[in-house]
Amino acid sequence: MSVIGKIVTLLRGSARELGDSIVDANGARIYEQEVLDARNAIVKAKGELAGVMAKEMQSAREMERVRAEIERLEKLAIEALDKEKADLAEEVAAKIAEQEAELEAQTQSHANYALQVGRLKDLIKTSEARIREHEREVQIAKTTESVYKATQAISENIGSSGSKLVSARESLERIKKRHEDLADRMTAAETLDKEFGTKALEAKLAEAGIGEDSHRKEKVMERIRARREATAEVKA
Image (tube, rainbow, N blue to C red; front, side):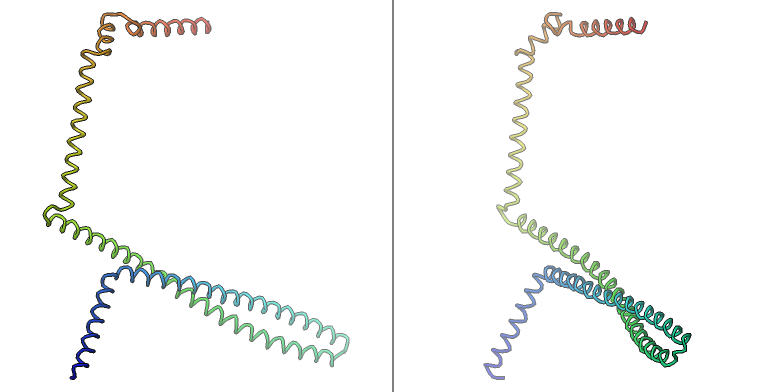
């Protein structure tokens, strides 16, 4: 093999490897797009199915029209025979024969449309079931790929010195310590307030029966008893 031939072979191999790597790296995305294309094809197929169903309904209406015309012509033929117009009756019979041939053609067309509609419906149902299955597989593939990426990122961070994960953990610990210190300070301040502040004084006054809050319960009970007595008088 010549040098140029070897170079061409090398380039072809490199291009194939590059193509494979691109497909592998974007496999889930490509799969998802293919499923989306299939879903769009189903939508288009449903539109075509609607067109065939419309033709089926049109052929059914045409059949009814031809039947009604045959019925009308037969009545005219009978009326012509009743009036001894045999020649006229034969002309009507010829017209009836044409209408019957038309009816047969419309019946055949209607049967063909009905057959196509049935086949298309079955095909669409089967295709939709397969697409739903592929959509589930796409979601599983995307989730699995995300988990693998997250696991890989965590492993790389943990395995490297001075990693971002370790730094973030240290920051979190500092935040927790700062919150604990703040909570301790608030608890200490509340304790001091109870011992030396306004709350402490109010508690001592209430305990000694001094101030508005000392007799609050008694006042409430007096109000309730008075209301009870007033209610009893009204009922009496």
